[in-house]
Figure (spheres, rainbow, N blue to C red):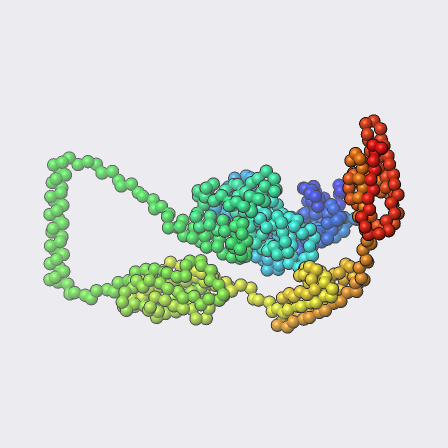
Length: 585
């Protein structure tokens, strides 16, 4: 469609086209600075999927790093999504330009991507096509994810045939090539994000093959190369994180985007510490001293020694004859060695962490512990009088990163320097949603759907654990008179809702009995016509025909002559009937 306007938007240029949509850059006719991306459905058969994309973008509108939907409308016979215009470059273009993206920048970008995916996954929406071309970086360096065109919600009806893959093969997880109802698309997104990080740091993909089928087999049966074998500058701990994220076994990957992001956060912090500790101190060259002749040099040495002895003797006389001894000043205690938990460690299940350190201030010393929610300690809380090298936080911590430091106190109450700051997070996960149980019985069996999700195929009973609230059940039996039954129901916490459905299924029609008929000829290979229709098989062959009268004809090409013979067969009994044509008589 080459029109000047699409709805209220003036088309600036066409920027792409694919199998499902045409894409334009446009501007609102009344707001010249409001640029948008106009995505126009090309294939009407995909209208439902297109609507789902718009619906998911609207649901995810609460995250600033997800490309936002501005408008969804019909333009003539076309369906249009107007989306936020991102003034920047795709990660794919960045990789093409730079070859390899610097380590710190790569980790930062992927942590932002995982933060976005964590937000979407909490709303049970899975992208399923994470790759560099779907990751944008705007002029301010902000990372955004685009193209939720094949994203899937947990309760979405399937718009793709079972066993059919969706995604980009180079970034797809092994199980994504032949998906099932049990495929965990959160782990699919983890795999694709890990593959993207591999590509950013090495400039290469972990698996490459001539076609999709060879690529699938490589991912299923082979192990990826180690990133450090391609780029030796990658830290070992970061390599381990990448390999874990792209494990071919979903159970061996990070089990959530949050877990993956926390692992990268720890590596990023460790790397910063290493960089700080290995900074070089500039060395100033000693000034050049003119060489002194040997005799003059020797005389100067003698005079210097004499002057030093004079000073020492004078100080000793002053010290012991004049000055009164004073008590020794208390010394400042040495620094504290922190033991556990490790820096940036993630604790789970509302653990009550025990902080331990190596006492260094000597016998009779104590320690002051401070903790805060920021590294500047502007909101620090202080716990004093600790003596045994450990402290258990009795009230627990939840869903926040806390920063810690320890001051040693000598027995003379001299306060030493604080320990290095370290931090950890206790991750209790999202607040669980109250659930109940739904149980359904079907007579005779049928396909059972709850909220559009199949929970039983050709089953007479099924059950599911569901969140509290309203749900919909649909039971389908195509052989019945009713075809399907549908009902809404409510789930309350800890309760079980039961439903029973019956279908009226007419008795099966009795199968019409057939009788074995053997048709032969001499010579063999004659074409057979039964009731005027040419059969796929030639003589000699056995057919099964209904009772009644049938005409049977056979033709045979013998030399240059085409011979034909015919017979009428009346089938009245269940015994085997034989028809034989002799073309040599």
